[in-house]
Image (cartoon, rainbow, N blue to C red; front, side):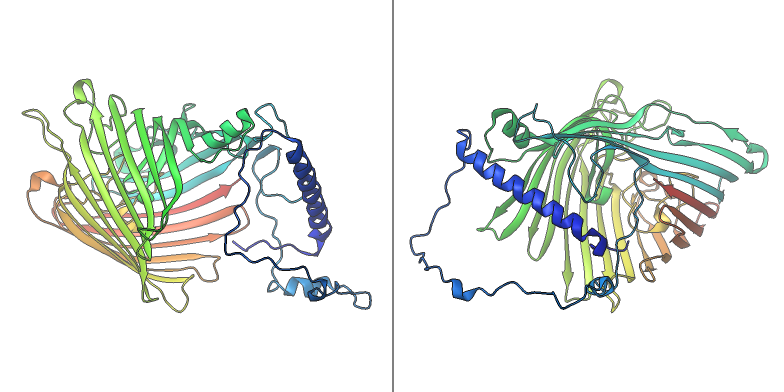
Length: 511
């Protein structure tokens, strides 16, 4: 996306906004002197500080441009010839607009003068439509499928909002589609409509709320979310799920003694809609009831990189009470020598104790290593090599697929047409993906990738029947500000199972 810079046409608006801000600042300062609610301490002056007498001779008069004609083209060249672009706007935008210059809309103080309400309603999202021909080994199908992602955001204050996310064209990962080929199993048109929200939550900052209600500035920040909350940790590898519960964080901490510039800690819990590939219901589908989740995770900037760590537990109830398990993870990411970006991630799964006659589905360890080379075109040419090894049956804490989602494009399906992929569980397997991503002039994407996995150990503890290999290609390009096309093709060779292949074309409209 081209960065947005102020052009000549925005100069009067910026001057006007600056005058408004200056006026508000002066009014606020005057009001602060009269207010008996401000309890911020006066700034401390160090004992060794020296005061300097004011000397007006060190200041020069402002420059004068009376004899220089204003040239807007030269002003644009200051920014490399870049201009503001007409970015896509939300489908519905009421109240204060998103990322717009100019005067602010009216504010209300019924939650306190220090946490002003500036209401706005925005509806945005995208519509994905894809045509594909997929061979998943057990059957072939040609189809057209659609998915609508609809975000509804009700902004209240600068830190509080109510958000909902809907996917009205699919239900239980079955999408509205038309199957036009596939032998005797063609379903024709299938409508999969749903009005239930995928997420519905309130989020805010307790420090800001208390500041508004009491009229006194608070010395703490405590962001939180409650409802049907989506959470994503470790790029979605460990947790990528939306469940009924909540989370709160201790943000922006530091420790000079430990040489930690920044760290945060997040606590979360959920009591419904929790999913894991290791816990199935009586029909064999993902169980999203009678499973609770509890966990804590942290992000730490240190050692010239950053650490991620987490500890969580799934606790089953009723018929699932013996299928819960514990999960721990730690990861470290940094750059080395100006030529390599590297992440090392470990995942431990332990504590599941199923009754006699019930198979264990969560136990083991996985190590994931992600590498990308820093070339002479670091933003557009990115060779990468990702590797993994999994012992026994390691599992994510909460998500509906396995641990290898980000290992490569050949391990990840499209969540729309059922595009084929290699086994993503990392259960008694090792392998990786070798590929290159090229972004041209940041206006297109081309990915070419080779992927492979090898099996070992007990056949009963893995889902891959044998070794697997794949070649995949992806091409993506925007054709306008709000339309994107994407083309994917892959073929996979599988030992002790039928080969897989797929080709798909998708067009996406963002609004």
